[in-house]
Amino acid sequence: MRPFVAVLLTVGALVQVPVHNVASAEGEATVVDGIAAIVNGEVITYSQVRALSAPQERMLRQQYTGQDLAKKLTELRQLAVKDLIDRRLVIQAFKKESFEIPDHLVDQRVNQIIRESFGGDRITFVKTLEAQNYTLGEFKQKEMEKIIVGAMRGHNVKTNSIVPPTKIDEYYRKHRDEFTSKEQIKLRMIMISGHKDTASAPAQKELAEEVLGKLASGAECEQMAQMYSEDSTKDSGGDWGWIERKTLAEPLEKFAFNMPVGRISNIIDYAGNYYILKVEDKHGGSTKSLTEVRADIEKKLEQEEAQQIQERWLASLRKKAYIKTF
Image (cartoon, rainbow, N blue to C red):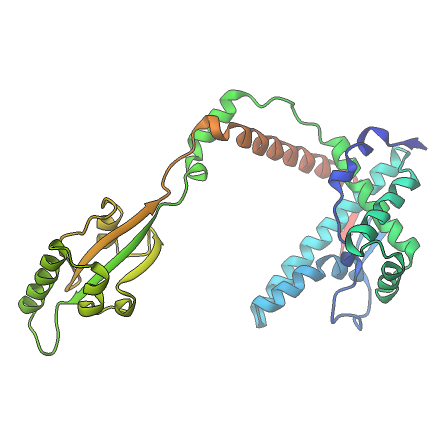
């Protein structure tokens, strides 16, 4: 057996799995186990699939019901089967290379879990495993496999150490929106209906002009909104708070987002009603320079390359393997 030293130096950063993930799926303890897949003669069971997908399943059950839930659960379990197949292939490749993981590394990982998740209380940790029908030996074996998977992926996924500057520049040009903050304005609005049972449209427009005149003379927009506005923000003085684009109807948005801070608009005639807007503050809408985001882009491109290399490596393992799903 060969010690897997080269990648063990970084394996600690690759393996971060909480202890509760070893538990079986809640509410499915009575389901009869069976074979979900066979990978080069090794069996993956339904219970293993449920154990892996359990945390996400709980979230789905809170969000969906009926046929939608059934569809989402099927998709999730299919992904879990695929993940377990890939893990098994990686472990088999590890064994084929006659590598080994020192026992003390697994012990360190277990001690880390006890320290971080159980406050150093080993007895509570062991009782938790027993409640989940796991022995300490079985748990160590699971942790060993997780370390192997992380180490093998790190060993086989080698990326170029330098991303070409031209590639970074190209990414920045094509994805400027990623580095542009959302534009927001703090808006106050007065809306006067163009038609009321007791008044005609011309009379309502005259009212809007009267309100605008009072604002021009120094009246507070908040007070004018409370007195004259007829939309749902009347009681709060026409306060819309901070809003983004696509919040208002397009004609109103065009005016609002192009107004200087503190300016009161002219009367905007839209959809038979009269609007007066005031932008009290604004922020966002600025784009970070390439210099500011170059390091982030480089890291992202490195991660994408690593993901592509990893997928090609896994694809080669799948191609050589006998895999059957049920």
